[in-house]
Structure formats: structure tokens, C-alpha cells
Length: 316
View (cartoon, rainbow, N blue to C red):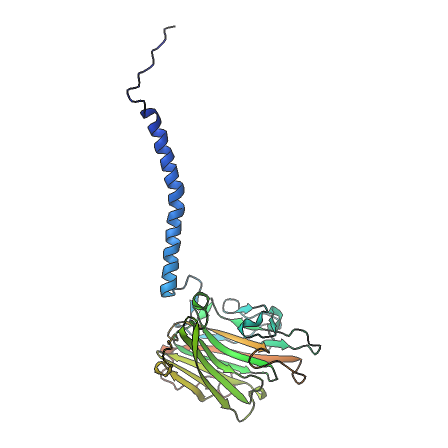
């Protein structure tokens, strides 16, 4: 057999060039793909931070009526497409005593949502409930009302309120807070507050208290907030109790209420405000919510805030 002479290599470096190129390509792919993903994530995060846009899943309510009548079987949870039940202890920023639990929030089978605060006579930790529409439903402008029967007792703080949708991103007070109704200790006097930022670490507040002719715990009442550009109006039944405009904010405060807000109901126990329960506090306390109604701004037909459906005590 005749041996074939090997082909002479004119460029010895050519033997190594192709493998080196392949290694470089693999290295660029290994580094470039994660880097590209990181860039996309950073861009999306930057857009979210500076514009506050919402990811799919959030249902903003500006375009349509929302009516929650809380019909359902006794013991059932409120509609999870609208409501989330918040749980846990830890004081919630006010050194509160209660632990929020899922069991404290349930339909009663008679068309109401009931939040129950239990204050054990033996002094053990109270339990209660807190619900929010955060991440499910929120609104920028329009009228939100709820027909509610509030509990009364030393150390109880029932509340119907709003928080800015960007609270998870910017925190409190930068997101803003609107306390539609709070009744610390007694329902013979109502408290209404609007909190906003001076900067990221300080806050301003505007406050109003109203002495009432009869305790709100005696019956259901309709509590309302209307958000307009540069304006927030609060009412009990057909009576305006607080009307705040952007120029009412103390300098150097910032107005943040032209952004989307979500709704909360909570029944806190103890804390810096309103103080702790005592021997006079009932062991079982119920915040009973008959319905909640949102009407978009373009469907209000210039009706005064006093013309809230259900203000006479009937459902809308």
C-alpha cells in the first residue's frame, strides 16, 4: 500500500483559529443572553419606578361601575377577584395589638360582609380582620361609597380608607392615604384624615372631626369619598364632612391624590391611637358592610355628593 504524504500546513495558526472562534461565540452567548435579560428587567423596572404603570392583572375601575353586594353563603370569603384578606401581627406601624386572620372576615349569608374583632377577656392577643382591593381593583377619579354599621368600644378603630397604588414601591407617606371614616373608641365622633408626603421621610396631614347627633354604631350609614382632579370630598350620608383641594396642602407638602388608589376596610384593636382596650370593651365586635359602590366620574351626571344611592338606608 502506498502511503499518502500529509498535506503541508502553510499557516500553523489556522489549526487553532476555528476552535478559538467557536469558544468565543459560546462565551459571548453565555454572557450576552443573561446580560440582555438583565437589561430588559432594568428597563421595565425603571419604567415602573418613574411612571408607576401597572402590570397585567390590575383592574382599574375608572371605566365602569363596581358594585359589591356581598351576597353569598354564610362563612364564605369575599370575591377574590376584588378583595384580598391581609393577615399577620406586628403592630402594622401603630403598635396595634391584634393579629389579622382570615377567619375574621366572612360573609354572613344575609348580604353583608362581617369583619369580627375578638378581644379575649383573659388578656390574650386580640384577633381581627383587614381586607384590601390592592392589586385587583383601584380608581383615580369618581365616587366610592359603602354602607356600613360600625362597632364601638374602647380600643377599637374601625376604618374605611384608601391608599395609593404605588405604596409597595414608594412606601408611606409618599403613596398618600385618605381616611374616609374612622371612629376611635366611640362612634359618637368621627375622624377624617388625608396624609401625604413632604418628602420620602416626612408627612403632612389634614384632619377633621365631627360630633354626631347619634352614634354611628346604632345603625347603618353611608360613607363616601369623591376624588376629582386636585380635590377630595368626604361625606357621611348626605353631609359633607371634609372638602380638601390641592392648594390646601401645607407647604412643602406634595399632592399625590391624582394617582390611582385602592380601598381597604379594617378593624384595628389598640395601639398608639386609639389606645388599648379595657374591661368595658366587648369581647366580640363586628364591622358589618352591606355594600360598596363605585361610580366613575363621567357617570356622576353632576349629581351632588349627597345624592349617594342608599343614603336613605336602602341598597342602591
